[in-house]
Image 1: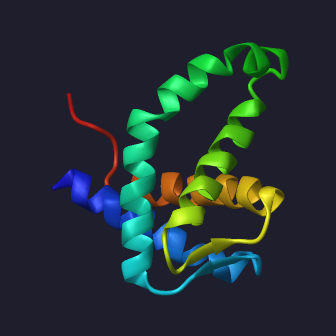
Image 2: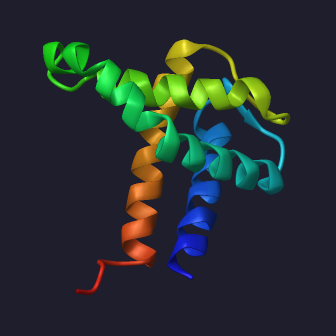
Length: 116
């Protein structure tokens, strides 16, 4: 149940991005659900490998390259999901930052802390 709730919160966070950035377009909430699902699968499968490959750059930039990596993942998803478009690289980076902040805040408010 918690996984579905987090998925819905992530989709709502994606659906809110066009209201903040003019360069990001999400056609419908259904599209946001698909993008959230694809992004979560890619973050589970591909992101650890990309993080490991870019570890020297991440250490050199004191962790700031993680934002670039998140933006590239979001931009990559926008290339093959219909109804979701991002105008450029910097829009993807700033969109990924705002998306993660919104989804983190909403998840912590709605779901709360894990119980031991």
